[in-house]
Length: 454
Ligand code: UD1
Image (cartoon, rainbow, N blue to C red; front, top):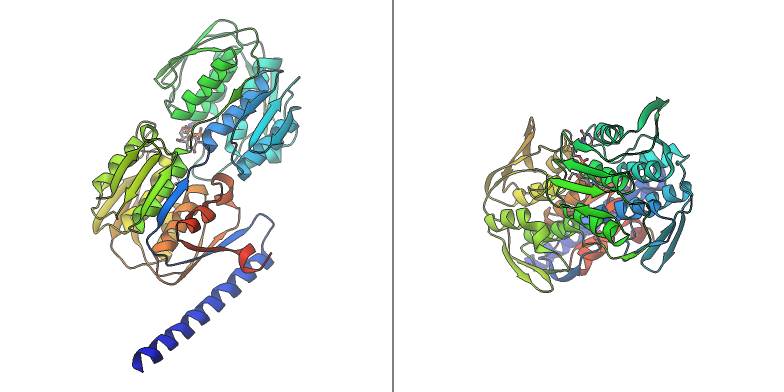
C-alpha cells in the first residue's frame, strides 16, 4: 500500500512538474521569435542502438563556396539540412549563383559571381567570409560585409585579408564592408595562426591566381584536405593539404564536378559523448576514427570502451576517470568538442581540467551547466570541473552551437526535466536532427513543436 501510495504521489509530482515545464515552454514560444527552439529533456536511460553521422557542416560550407570558382555546376552530395547551410545558399544566390537542391544534393552554378549585397546574411554566419576569395580571384574585385556567427570570441578576418593583400589585392574599408580589388599573383604567405577559414579562403583564391602560392603554417583539419581534394577534381593543382605547408599552382579555369564530403567529426564526437555520459552502448555509423583520434584517446582515458569497426565507432560504458585536456588546432583536441567534453567530465569522479586555447570566450555553457547543479569554475582560459555532483533539471539557455549540444547532453543525465531554450536556433544551425537522433537511441527529448502540436 505504501509503495502504491508513494508511486501514486511520485506520479502526481511528475505530472505536475511536466505540466509546469510544458507551460514554461509554451510561454517561451509565445513571446519568442521565429527562429526559437525549445527542448524539453527528461532524465534518460542508457542510450543504445545505432545512429548515422551526417556529412560535415564544416566541410560542406567551404565546398559550396567553391562553386563560385567555376561557371560549371558544382554538385555537392549529401548536404545536411541545417540552417547554416541554408544561410550560405542564400548568400550564394545573392552572389548571382544558381543554387538547386535535388534530394540531398545541392548544385551551385556561378556564371558571373558578384559581391553579396545583403550584409545581414553575412552577419549570420562566420563561414560567409569564404565567398571573398572565390569572388575576388574570379572577377578581380569583391566587397563583403563582416561575418558573424557564434559569439565565442572576437573572430577577426585579418589573416584572410593579409593573405589576399600579399597576393596583390588592394584592401579598402567602406563603412562596415571591405572592398578588395586586383589581379592575384601567387606568393609565399605565412599564417600567424593556423586558421581554418583563412587557409580555405586563400587556397580557393590561389587556385585561379597567377603562379605559385605557398601557405606556411596552414591549418591541417580534415575539412582542408576535403576542400583541396574537391578543388583538384575541379582542375586545381594543390599539394600538401593536411600538412603545415600547402602549395597551390594557379590554373586558368576550373570545371565542375560531383563531390561527396567527409562525415561530420564534431557530430560524431557529440554522439560518442552522449553515449559515454549515459553509460550507453551505441554504434556511431560512418564516424571516421582517423579524424577523431584526440577525442578517442581522451574518452578511452576516462574509461569509456571504444571499438573501431568498418561501419563506424562503437562506444560502450561510462566515463569514470577525471582528465585534463587542451584544445588546439588539428590534430590537437578540437575546440568544438570542448563543451560536450565538459559534460563528460561532470560524470567523472574527481577534478577534470579543460583548457581552451583557440577561442577566448568559449565557456558560456559553464554558467548554464552550473544552473543544473554542476560544479565548474572558470579560471582564465581553463574550466575546472568537480565531477560527480548530482544534476537536477532546470531551465537553461543555449549560447552557441556546441554549447547548445552540450546542454542537451547534460539534460539527459540531470534528474527530472530540463528546459533548454535555444532562442537563436543554434542547435539547428549546425546539427541535422540531433534531438531526433538522440531520441532514436532512447533519449527522452521533445521539441516545442511536438509539445504544442505544431
Ligand atoms: C572553423 C570552424 C569552427 C571551429 C574553428 C576552429 C568552420 C565553418 N568553422 O572556424 O567550427 O571552431 O575552425 O577549429 O569550419 N583568427 C584570427 N584571425 C583570422 C582568422 C582567425 O585571429 O583572420 C583566430 C580566431 O579568432 C581563432 C583562431 O584564429 O581564435 C582559429 O580560428 P579559425 O581556425 O579561423 O576558425 P574558423 O575558420 O572561423
